[in-house]
Image (tube, rainbow, N blue to C red; front, side, top):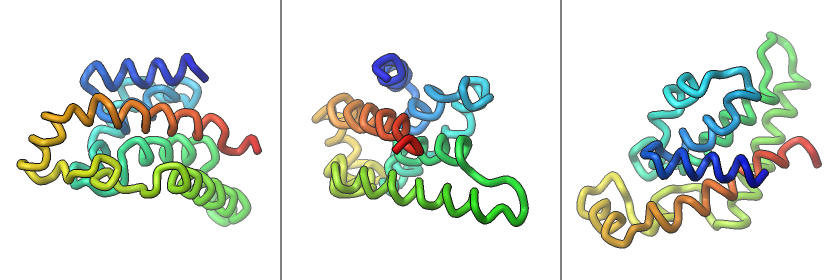
Length: 146
């Protein structure tokens, strides 16, 4: 688990967003190339660039979907299980962090240029986001195992 956390943080520190950092860390075991994982998750960072659901969470949900999602018509058992795991994951995150929303996690809305400047000035991407990414990687690692 520590190796995955380190890989996700390294990805983030190399200029990729939180969603990319999470999904790409699991890409190999999910049968995706790193490039494909990075491309798929590009638009989800920063709460889809609107301060909505945190990109790390959406990256985590992509991992859960790829691992446990249903792909066969009528497979309600797998579908129900995937939805259950989604609820457990998001609930666990909310219990720890109070919200799923990027703008609330950062305390500022990155879709507003003035607030984005404050985020950068306070280096919140460097202090808050790595902790969130690590938490999501850890939570995703445990999904379905309990």
